[in-house]
Amino acid sequence: MSRSGSGRPGGGGPLLTQRAAIVFLLAALAALAGAGAGVLAALAGSAWPVAVSAGTGTAASGVLFFKEIIG
Image (cartoon, rainbow, N blue to C red; front, side):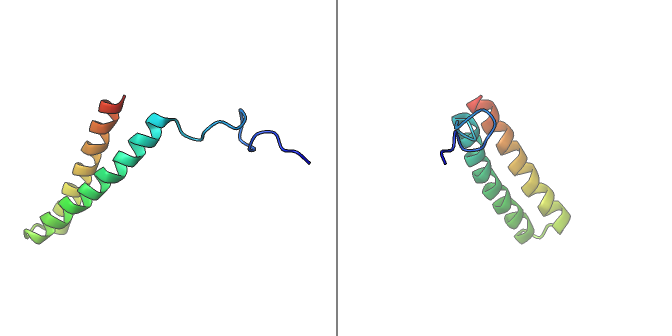
Protein backbone atom coordinates (compact mmCIF):
# COMPACT_ATOMS: atom_id res chain seq x y z
CA MET A 1 0.00 0.00 0.00
CA SER A 2 1.63 3.25 -1.08
CA ARG A 3 1.08 6.52 0.68
CA SER A 4 0.88 9.80 -1.14
CA GLY A 5 2.44 12.62 0.84
CA SER A 6 2.71 12.45 4.58
CA GLY A 7 -0.90 12.84 5.58
CA ARG A 8 -0.75 16.62 5.83
CA PRO A 9 -3.10 18.75 3.79
CA GLY A 10 -1.39 19.95 0.66
CA GLY A 11 1.04 17.06 0.28
CA GLY A 12 4.50 16.43 1.65
CA GLY A 13 5.78 19.97 2.06
CA PRO A 14 7.55 21.19 5.19
CA LEU A 15 5.61 21.94 8.36
CA LEU A 16 7.39 25.27 8.81
CA THR A 17 8.95 27.71 6.44
CA GLN A 18 12.61 28.59 6.95
CA ARG A 19 11.59 32.01 8.26
CA ALA A 20 9.25 30.49 10.87
CA ALA A 21 11.90 27.99 11.98
CA ILE A 22 14.48 30.75 12.45
CA VAL A 23 12.00 32.93 14.35
CA PHE A 24 11.12 29.99 16.64
CA LEU A 25 14.80 29.26 17.26
CA LEU A 26 15.52 32.88 18.11
CA ALA A 27 12.38 32.99 20.27
CA ALA A 28 13.83 30.12 22.31
CA LEU A 29 16.99 32.16 22.77
CA ALA A 30 14.89 35.17 23.79
CA ALA A 31 13.10 32.99 26.35
CA LEU A 32 16.46 32.00 27.81
CA ALA A 33 17.46 35.66 27.99
CA GLY A 34 14.15 36.41 29.71
CA ALA A 35 14.73 33.65 32.24
CA GLY A 36 18.18 35.05 32.92
CA ALA A 37 16.79 38.55 33.38
CA GLY A 38 14.16 37.25 35.78
CA VAL A 39 16.74 35.35 37.83
CA LEU A 40 19.03 38.36 37.97
CA ALA A 41 16.16 40.61 39.04
CA ALA A 42 15.21 38.14 41.78
CA LEU A 43 18.81 37.89 42.98
CA ALA A 44 19.01 41.68 43.06
CA GLY A 45 16.29 41.70 45.70
CA SER A 46 13.22 42.51 43.63
CA ALA A 47 9.90 40.98 44.56
CA TRP A 48 9.02 37.91 42.48
CA PRO A 49 6.24 39.66 40.50
CA VAL A 50 8.75 42.30 39.42
CA ALA A 51 11.28 39.62 38.49
CA VAL A 52 8.68 37.70 36.45
CA SER A 53 7.62 40.91 34.72
CA ALA A 54 11.23 41.74 33.87
CA GLY A 55 11.82 38.28 32.43
CA THR A 56 8.58 38.24 30.46
CA GLY A 57 9.19 41.71 29.08
CA THR A 58 12.69 40.76 28.00
CA ALA A 59 11.51 37.60 26.26
CA ALA A 60 8.59 39.32 24.53
CA SER A 61 10.68 42.20 23.27
CA GLY A 62 13.31 39.75 22.00
CA VAL A 63 10.69 37.79 20.06
CA LEU A 64 9.25 40.97 18.52
CA PHE A 65 12.73 42.21 17.64
CA PHE A 66 13.72 38.97 15.89
CA LYS A 67 10.36 38.76 14.11
CA GLU A 68 10.88 42.23 12.65
CA ILE A 69 14.54 41.63 11.75
CA ILE A 70 13.86 38.33 9.97
CA GLY A 71 10.65 39.55 8.34
